[in-house]
Length: 395
Image 1 (tube, rainbow, N blue to C red):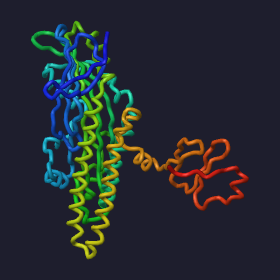
Image 2: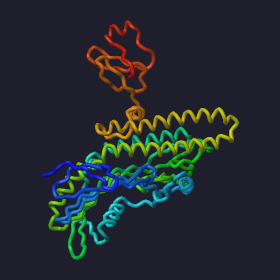
Image 3: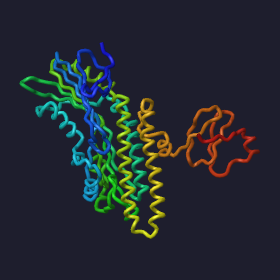
């Protein structure tokens, strides 16, 4: 038998996550407050322990690190308000990162013997998760472009490996499974404005950094910085004689695991607030740069309004994505999704919605419910009557 269970922090009495957990396990967890990195507001650790059979399952929530290849950018990031030095880390190859995670919990006596794919939601939906990752970063990139330093992505990696190890402890053999939902993105910038202020996502243009491109993540050029890490990490430790049962229990748990709805909403809220703080810092830097220009007051007022509007929209987009989470698992609102894909939403005559490319100035529907977009002037009434077309409007 199995049942859907809640993982609860016993100290704070907070629901952390839920999953289907097979019988015989004691479950629990802990919430660690405080930003682990710019994009990770807090960390959740959950566990399921079968004391009788000495089976342990651990799931750790997101952690992200930043590797700076541009020294100037590193100095700027270190000086930002509430900078998180522990999130600055030299890049580690994904498999080595996973090996280190497994060894940090079990111990060093591990030998890798097999490799597969994670049965997690991320592992089963790599392409969808990749698209969601890029929607989020495209919002950040658009903000950078508004500030005069357009950020671009080079290599991007979404990866969900699961490694089986043989381990020994106290002369007893164990089976260890370690897996992760890995995300990584390489970024570089080419400022259009030499007075543009540094920001935690952009750097000074440096031709020496624009070497021949590499498609291997972590080794791409150009690259000023990388953000990398795991959206979640998973670990199973079990005596060799219980390998089959433990593996089945592990797969059942991780394939149904998800953070508690209320906790994930709070996660997005804190993430949006942190981003707003960085936008305000960028606005302040830009104000200082514009003091060197003759039209400071006009330009600064215009820029401040523009950035404030963008920041409000971005914050709303991040929070609105929560409302659509259960249906689409999307972290970016429909408004940004339309902008990124270059479409507008129109309401058809029967009340349903249809997406049409933004290049069309007028959109019409015929008697067969077919929709046509037209660029330029609207069609005259005689032609519309002959075609039996009716113009429809944007939502």
